[in-house]
Length: 117
Image (cartoon, rainbow, N blue to C red; front, side, top):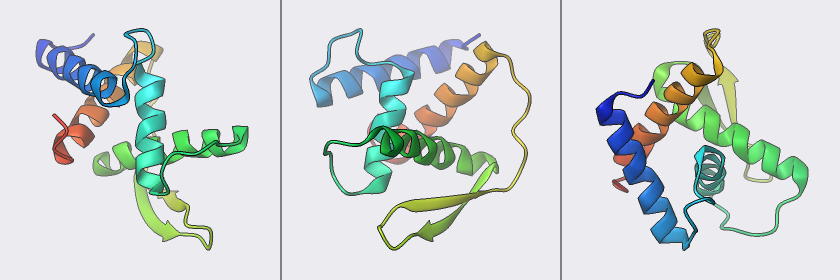
C-alpha cells in the first residue's frame, strides 16, 4: 500500500509524464514511465525499437532506478552504446503490490534526482 507521500509523489510523476509527452490519462502508467526512463538512460533519443530492444529498455530502467538501493551496479556501455549493469544483491521476494510500491518509490526518487518533480 502506498503511503500518502508516495501516492502524492507518484501522481506528480504521472502528471509530469503526461504533460511532457502529451498523453492521455490511461497511457501514463508504471510501464510507460519505465519505458521512458529506459529511453532516457540509453541516451539515443526516441526511435522505433524492436521488441527485443523494448525488453532491454525496461531492463535498463529497472536497473537504473534500483541501483541506488544496491541491487545493481552500472558497468558501462557496450560498443553499440547500450548501458550494462551487474546484479549486486538478490531482489527480495515481494508480492505484486509490494513490487509496485518499490518500483514507484524508486521512480519517484529518480524523477526527483533529475529535477523533473
